[in-house]
Amino acid sequence: MPIFTSPFDPATETALVTGAGNGIGRAIALALVGEGVRTVFADIKPETVEAATKSAANPDLAIPWTGDLAQRSECDRLLADSRAALGLITHFVHSAAPPRREADHALAVTDDTWEQMRSVNLDAGFHLGREISRALIAAKAPGSMLYLTSLHAQTPRNLPHYSTSKAALAMLVKEFAKTLGRYKIRVNALVPGAIAAGGFVADPALARHIPLGRLGNADDLAPLALAVLSNRISGYVTGASIVIDGGLALTNWFDPPQLDD
Image 1 (cartoon, rainbow, N blue to C red):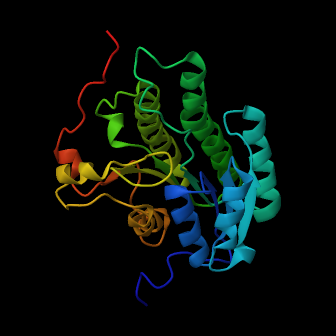
Image 2: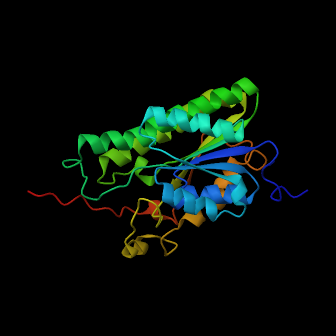
Image 3: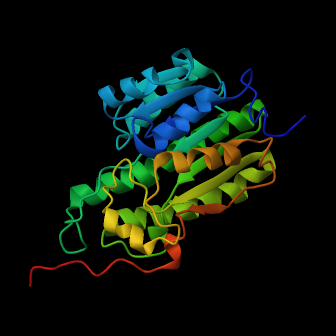
């Protein structure tokens, strides 16, 4: 049987996707539902979550959830609600991230903005991933997790709260992968480039720095996300960071921030 005809087993596999109301998270969540996987769509805005789940190929498989993952209590509520709806969570995608403002450079970013970015990107990613893994270990079931990091885990972005949280998330992927591999839980990262979706408002002029000649979109990431999540397709892949950027990482396109001297 061809390996790409059935990457998931809808009878036993489920998914939780954060940031599923828009952008990359939405594209991945919709693609999972398209493969017959019952999926929780988690995001902070009810209207975007509702729109996303209604647009699913089979809305009955798309479970909406809203809450602020900067709060630990909301992370715990998400876990409880997802388990009530899905049973065992076998696949986890962490795409949630607060909006970014170009004005928030190192000399301007507030403590609250710094804290919120770290709390959602890193703290929620760690807590949710660890608790999902504990349940998989207890059930002696395989699973996979996928984190959305960034090219700016390696390259300054003029947004220190964003780039440092993504750098920490990239190391969390490696830590999880090393620890959880013995339990057949795989953990990987997708590394988006200039994707015109979610919290990134792309300047079309950026395309001149991209070897493939265009900005990316969320649907450019969904097929590879599913391939990496699938234990049938990528069962020997863990701890990997897979860049999807049209070649943008081959250039160095960001100038230093403008400061009010």
